[in-house]
Length: 117
Image 1: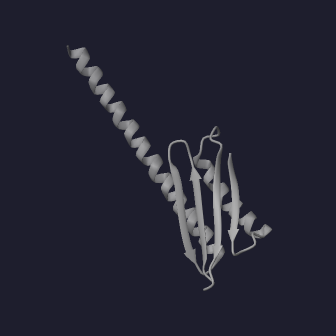
Image 2: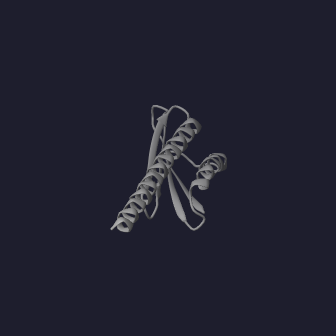
Image 3: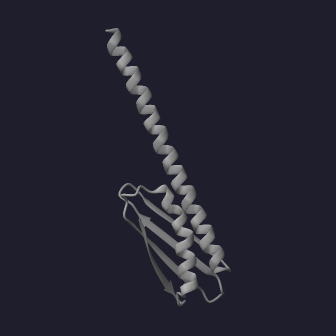
């Protein structure tokens, strides 16, 4: 289960913003094992030029997922950062599956060589 810690700098985190962040990050839970208890640290910032920055860090036992986005709209920044995290997760999962596949092929090859001896 993914716990979400939302913090605001120069902005009060309203219930609507908190719910939106939780709703968007909940879509990432499908990529995690049920056993992984992780905490997503979300930092929302608003600058004097009316731009909003969203930073999300999710430390996991095997890697740290981190993304940040800046745009004039807070909700757009949340969407962009969630999309970036999803891309990172897909890339990592693809890499892991390719490594596992290569190891299986290598093991089969080694077994065949042992049988020939």
